Image 1 (cartoon, rainbow, N blue to C red):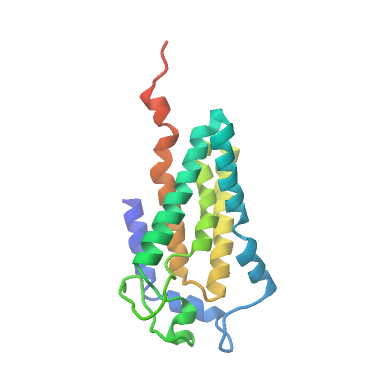
Image 2 (image 1 turned 180 degrees about the vertical axis):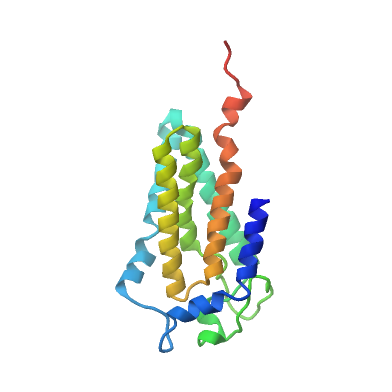
Length: 210
């Protein structure tokens, strides 16, 4: 029920908040451009890349953490890959802020309810960069399973901070609307939660004997 309510809230916000937020960054006929935003755009995904690299190494060489490695790989492949990029970006076309007439583009603004857009390459929904930041939230279920509070807090803080920074960057650059980045958070957190039973499946199916 929580995931449904939060999704409906994001859809509702797209009706009236997106343009106001993006307008804040649209000054003198252009969106924000500076070296800091460019640096975050280029390198802000690196923590997520390091995590997936560590997951692959763990799956191949660390037997005691192999299940966690597989879990991290699946969260990224399914969440960022299949859901965010394949299903939503390709299957639910939405113009980016810099593509809409309100900010000097060629097409009118479309809320998340408006699926059918033709005549261009529209892939605003969701933010791929933000999914890489929110991907770090996948460490939270691992920390809970391993009973390591420090890993829970690290995943929570790192995920929210990096996801938030990347979301801010892409909104400021005119690459995504606010609700695009909220959808990135929703997709990655939901995927991490949905796949978390994989971390304990082995223990449940093979209870310890006395």
